[in-house]
Amino acid sequence: MNVADCYFNWKWHKQQSMFRKGTMSETLRFDPIYSEHAIERCAWTVFFTQPLPEKLYGNVTQAAGDGAQERGFQPVAFRGIQFNAITGQVVSGQASGGPVEFVTPDGAQQLSITPQSVSFASTRYVRWTPFFGQVSDLPLKVAERFVDVVSVSALKVEYWDRFIWSGEWSDFDPNKLLRGDNQYAAPGAVRGGNAWHSHVGWFERTEGAVRRLVNINIDAVDFLRPNTIGPKPSIGVYTTIQDAFFLPGSLQVDVGIEAIKTRSTEIHNDLKSLLGQIILDDMQSRISLNSGARADVR
Image (cartoon, rainbow, N blue to C red; front, side, top):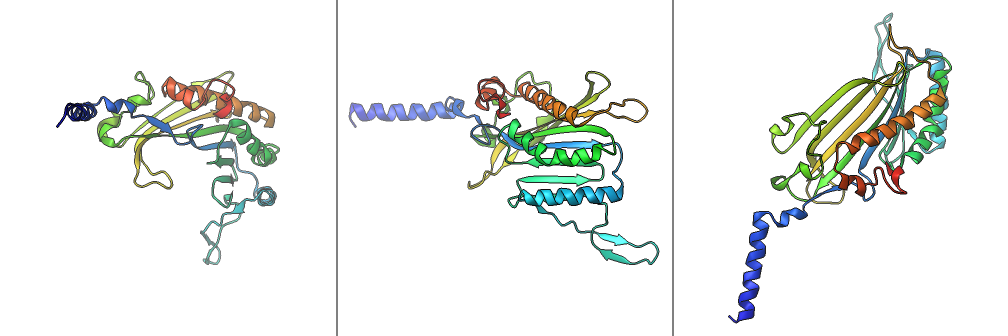
């Protein structure tokens, strides 16, 4: 063996030793589920103080169904049973006045209506502006029919963000994503082993008499990307803010459609700030959370 061969073998063994000692593991990192953002799903929901009268609710859902199908949505058939208290007869089928749902053919977008709420969710989130444009296109118009008759009780916006670990559970390191001083992860959550869950929530007062509920779930779980072999460790961050405008015996705030629009965007911006308090600055930059021309990505 000549000198060159000896040097090559020494260098190869040194690299392997460095890898085993963890030097090479510094390249391990979290990646957002998508190239430009980490959002798996976003949802918007408005709640009302009381159910819409049955006949009016039927008219509203019929009109909403027509509008949804014009936009490519399909109705979801709910299975159930009805019981006639007079005859004792039990028949299959959905009772009138029940929830209705419309979905796109790929299941990526859902419009859900109950006698006391209107909700829209999407797994094709790109930016807030087009997402809320979709909300304004139909769900908000449905909500406007409710507002003509009943009062708004609460407004909620939810985000599900997902970050994929490049390594394995044996080298999984949440500190490469989550802030070390993170006050939003429950102490002791990691005691369960590889997979763990943390839930934190609290009430706070905003301006006026509005009461805000904030919830944060952080999960470390296996995640299987499409067209890949085997799951990878991941961290999912669920954040939601719900503002309550009407609480029996105390808070009562009159909210109209324009106020819903304004506050929806305010909640969205507050959720951006909240995520920024959970994840590291480097990941915030990678998903363009709060900076540059693409700040509206979230």
